[in-house]
Image (cartoon, rainbow, N blue to C red; front, side, top):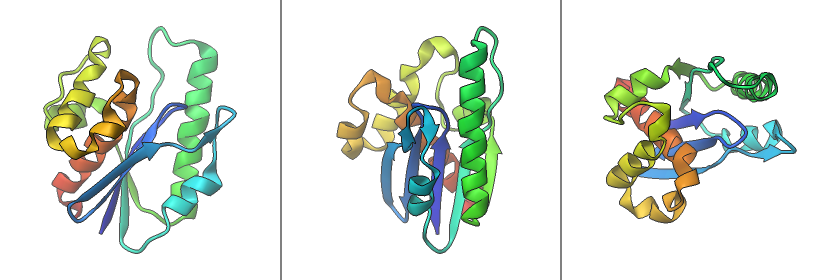
Length: 150
């Protein structure tokens, strides 16, 4: 079975787990919009399941950024449905607790550091602080693996 972990957003990421193999990459975005065709091409495989962080408006976010985030989140869900990939949405609090990642917006680097503990061989993909979205996609996917999806 192939498990996808998705951290949505313009700077989001997608992870892919197959057996003990893990990969991560940025979501395909062109001009602030999800490239659904490219995403669908990544989802082509038998025996798939996706886990995606549940999206919601956050206090202090601007109207434009909230709208853009929602558009990408909706496009991801539509692409998963069209590609016939079953999915589950998960709150950030749930996967962070299960994966032992300290919460809080001020601690964005915690997910990256936790992912490096679990997948040190992905260090090149997680070397920059701004790679926290890749780390979150990995941790969301691992949460899915541990939840019995495999």
